[in-house]
Image 1 (cartoon, one colour):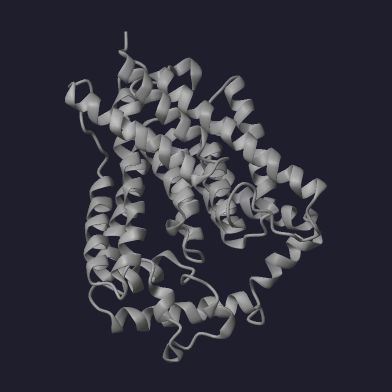
Image 2: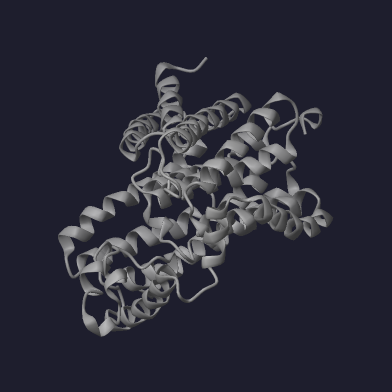
Length: 387
């Protein structure tokens, strides 16, 4: 029988997950903070051990280097304020501490699914009843690109559950996936669309590798039946006349110049926009209105330096390698879905600084951590009858 602290710990974590797709980041962070405090109490009571997957250590290095970058920032006050978001990395050990049994996992997955339903019903309802033609729907998020990133990570993870599990839960997740993809389309965010395409390839590779030949056919059919507004967004991705495409080229060039000028620790977290206003970095007036460089790699390099970027890339590589190994060994869909979510996030991140969105990062870290839970490697792992 769990004691009251253990129950409260799991409850706080479930509320954080329930807030992950549909609520504000402030609410999610509040519940996660409560879970962190209760987790420390459980550690002191020796009812939990501090356990993390290998990819957590590069994240810790990233956090340390980010704080060092803040100390030498062009505006330390702004950088240290931004660095509070580094506490989100605690979601990794908290997830492993919370998911100890099969029932814990089912509760977490259920909370995530319910949260997605709330988000997508709201977004699609707004699109049908209120949105103007071509309006980019942002749902509960502060920006449509954040909404797109959240939905892409969730939908990619859902693919693993749908293809590898059986029973009513598969049907529920299929419904969640369809709604999430529909809501993703009305964000008109091409980077997340591309990420979802890669995620689909990843999951199919682990499910039925030969079925990969169907992906380009499905993509072509989807384009043919898509509304004209979506077709236009796809076509615009391949033209240099699009102002957004031109700005991204400018961001890449400017980011490299800034990184060289501010070696070795960058300009400092959340300060790049203060620096790239300088005409010598070649940004046009449209590009200068943004607050970041529209790429994880370029942004981290410019504001935190090459060592911090190396730590971030190590996180990606170790997470990918660990999940790949688990996906080959465990046909329960968790690792394959998490690998798809990571792929969608990483690919979209070439065109958008999605690691800078706390909502996306927190959901991603929870999803990446679930397959590494030690509790799922024991007797309560999925039985063959459920696979």
